[in-house]
Image (cartoon, rainbow, N blue to C red):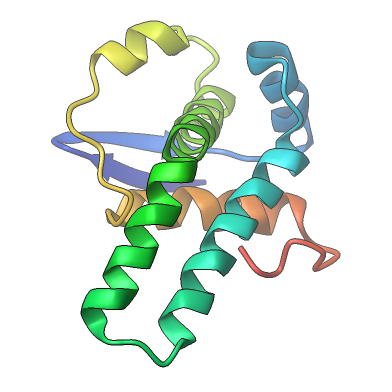
Length: 132
């Protein structure tokens, strides 16, 4: 079990074999494909960081990648977060209700890293998702 803090609220997370079933049932999506989507996004950002560009040029390229992918990335992050909370507490509110409690979301916040790492460690034990 892990704990995260989003804004002023603390949540407990759990991830196990049943999490994958809950994810598909709740979102009609495949969790491994979504983890791969995150991996590809973060790989794009890392490649930009390694380019021989000024900080301003790197920031501009990163912003472009963000604009092209932000909806998908944000959806996956929120869905992963929710399903890890829900796996821990099956009496937790529904997804839409939870979203209504959310404030501003920043991709650089600590909870994002915890959620992604936790899902990766849970499902990617064979290292095919090692770039996340």
